[in-house]
Image 1: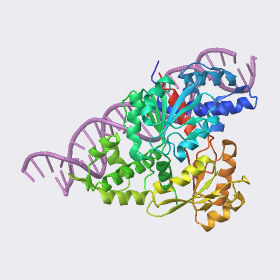
Image 2 (image 1 turned 45 degrees about the vertical axis):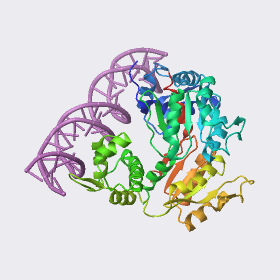
Image 3 (image 1 turned 120 degrees about the horizontal axis):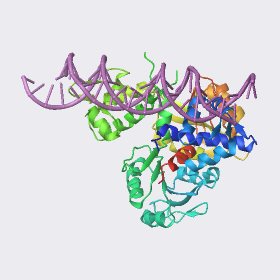
Image 4 (image 1 turned 180 degrees about the vertical axis):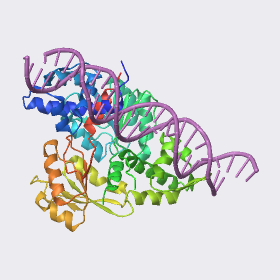
Length: 204
Length: 204
DNA sequence: TAGATTGTTAATCGATTAACAATC
DNA sequence: TAGATTGTTAATCGATTAACAATC
């Protein structure tokens, strides 16, 4: 298979979300033109993106919504339940845990860790906050493959190292700090402070 | 001035954060090579990015850290205090309000809104949650120019519309929904569900 | 001076968009 | 059949990187 660029992969979840909205509204078919209009994207881009993975459309007709949902879910590996570990039981960690419902059942935070003595043993929803020294064992026994970092910047690299050692394959880092990991581990940064700072540039 | 691409603007806060780290460690000068190594970027890119805004370096020497911090802060308009309004006093909204300390004093959430009756009047740090019908007046009286959306997806567009009507210039949207605003308003999406979904693609 | 590093042009690389034959 | 829309190539656009003269 050709190498798929990260830009393409990042658009797939947006397509999926849009398709789910159509599905809820019982819309059976969608064209790349509809698609582009609603998402503010170029129709050719949407056709090209989807075509990296197969011929999902019908000429003259468009794309079948339920079929395309199924296909994108397969591509993104969202047709299986993905277990997620979160480190950092602060405000942001709490907020993300409570978001579980929004993530549907295919992404689930199943373990939470923190090394603050006051946090360990406390409960978030139905999860009990565990100490960091239990990370590797839990990751392996629960088949967790994705890790979320919601600790302060100064701790982020340590947590990333612990994730790597535990065998995590992908990391979503909310700490305002670039973390370094081996090339086979995928990292996304979700740092809202840099987002906010770059927004300020556009103020008049 | 030439048009600066968004990619460049998004890197400036990362440069700024790195420079602040150097400053704390009393490092006076930095070269684009050091820079690139620490941030995992190409040195030429860093020189080119900075050079869009002026000649901040010295040939043979590098960049003076405090001077470059000052310059980037000016470019990003972070040399003034920017007032921010947040709509959606849920878990995520709370978390972001408590993050204020991390944002230094140049970005400050100064008003919080929600339309849930149980939330109105409740307190987050030293802020009292206000009803949405007070948005425009507060935005104008407090000279708020940036808005944060932390409501459910279904409410996101309504809040965006209200922000636009109130005269907000830039929006950071955490809701998993693309919002549409007039072209003169700048929007960044900080949607962790799409981040997480695209990460799953890279699982083996 | 010699070594280092910027500023900046030119070359490369990659991503987006336009266009259209194929075909439902 | 006529109209619509995909799949896909070619053209365009934009961003990154290499290279090096200028100069501290």
